[in-house]
Image (cartoon, rainbow, N blue to C red; front, side):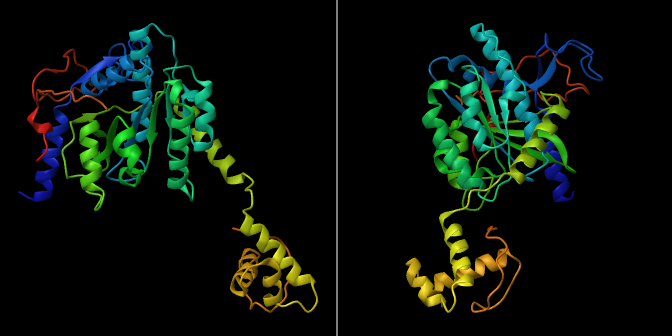
Length: 359
């Protein structure tokens, strides 16, 4: 048998062991969405059991962080779908556990670091807040700064934050290893089939990060369990897509504050164009920079204006813009979920699962 086919069949058997449970019975009565055969939504039973831990303990002056990424493709695997389902399930659990009345909707989701701190102060205590993936030229440095600010300013808000990122191994080590509660790898199976994930608890994600970071190898340790998740956002799809699109447009047209270097380049170029007989050397001395830096100032502004000429050629000035969890040991019964994931079985939590041990 072809090796690729063998690997595919092994992966399929791993995910067939998943136990699905019904949650949110009151929120989603039968008929809430197409092909629904009973009240509620489906969620992986082992994932649901793990979410009970932060839901129970967050009132003990705790703030939790979960990380979600993908080892297959960085986009399109369904990370946002799963994370919204986690946020919705956690909200139901924390409400039941502590008699709260928290909600989960678009106000629990932000799309850029600039909104994270502000939104954190607007949400009630013990809420879930999701920092969805965003596009930025300085993605990782902005993320590191945001996380530092979040844990410094928002530590006492007692929130459950879920971070969606493109690559687990590029996350700064303090947050990948010691700050985060768990890591979930949302992945494709077969021919780009969505709905699969691997769960790493606090200990396993540390092993994964330390041993796998150098070569981005996700095979250095096995996850605690493999899981499935159905399709469907927790917030209306059109509302989520509109919110993400608005954030992208706002970011695209946002007026950038020029840096000190950009301001110097602008005025260096303007003076060079308007002072008769001035040389780059003399003007550089007046600015307190080297002649090479002065030449670079001119080149940067000219490139921004679409011109490529020698340093001594004068041009009209147009613009100066420059460009967790305690490990839950389980034994899985090999059962293939029915078409709508219907099951009345509860996950078995008391026996040791040899498939979750490291090789």
